[in-house]
Image (cartoon, rainbow, N blue to C red; front, side):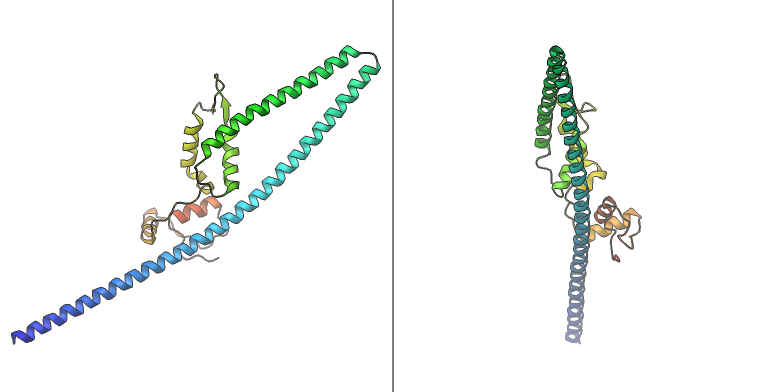
Length: 233
């Protein structure tokens, strides 16, 4: 009788272990499946963001091209008007006035060259500070550069700083931590499907049914919070 009880107990333990192993295998399979779906959503978002940034770059490049063309045309017209004025003064025998006009032209060009030289030192310093940051692509880096450089000024010692007085390195660090600038940088690796689910449940927000109408920043924010789930494209 005791032998039969022992066999029955062993059989029950064996079945229990088999059930636990089966449950563990199912949980691992579900975890892998969720991770695969999350990776697919992430890849889709990355593709959409890259496409939007490419369109933005094209628009900005065209705008800069037109601005450069207008600037060159304005310079050409201005130089032509100055040449005409100077020649007229010389024909009228007003050589001193003509010489003063030419001198003012040289001074203006010298001022422009000095400004360009100053800008180069500023740009070089900012470029050095941005080195090492992982931007999404080159256009994202250009966007960050143009945003920051427009806020730089020289202090009394001629050092380039942020207009708030903060050193460039400190402002760049703050810029990188700004949530509104996340779309410029490569997204951080997700810690896993379980982590995403926890963020989703704690955030209290629902998942979007479609990506249409969402901004780049909104998509990246939703992705980082694990709120994408099953989305209709």
